[in-house]
Length: 117
Image (tube, rainbow, N blue to C red):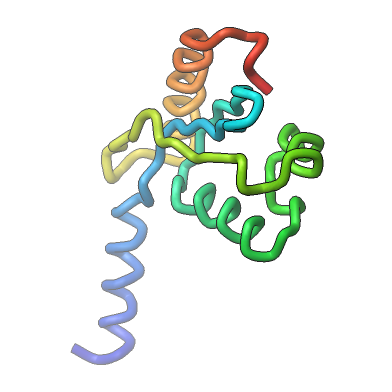
């Protein structure tokens, strides 16, 4: 296989295989408050939190966490994956986003609204 054909095949495989999508929560261990969210790429959420911690910068965080991050520091936040979505390979971004939004709403209902960001 030539380099060009190999690259085309890798691109096709990448497009067929979606990154891990799901619902997560970021908990402020000091206050007990939490942000429930969803992402089509859970690794990106983990990476943003890790980047914020490594640089001491709150710019990569969700805006709802900023005040507490500045007050309590970044080390009080803990990321938990609540649910993982396994979309079919042919699912569109819009279909995945709709499924994630539904799951996120269901997870939000489980928690006390006073504790949610």
